[in-house]
Length: 138
Image (tube, rainbow, N blue to C red; front, side, top):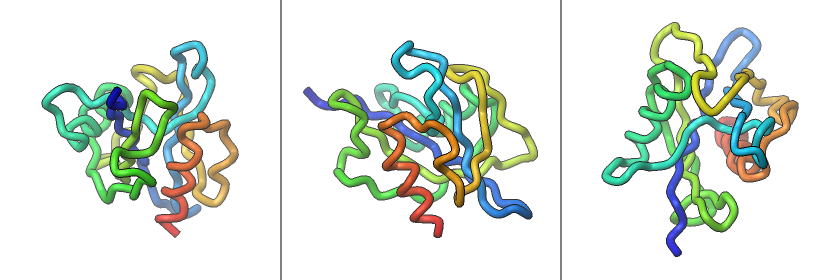
């Protein structure tokens, strides 16, 4: 069976305290609830991974983004999320002064310093991609 393609978006902001990454806490399904992840979601039929990134961030967080580089995955199909999913991860910045809000799939958002990215309880499937984001930005 071909894995389902999903997109994770590593939203970065830079301020006086340095660069930060946006973490989102899931509310469902029950086995993932309370874990932190990169926001994003499933690629719809006929949609590119870039289109998915823009759509999902608008739906989930209510902000528009500018996509940057893709974080190179360990496999051509993306970062493994169990057996059923593969995630492609892109860097992004919010394009206006809007503040992201947890509109869907999440109950909390937190800006995490790249130096202290392990301060949240990342979902197991997001650990390697988030570490790769941090290393890519160093």
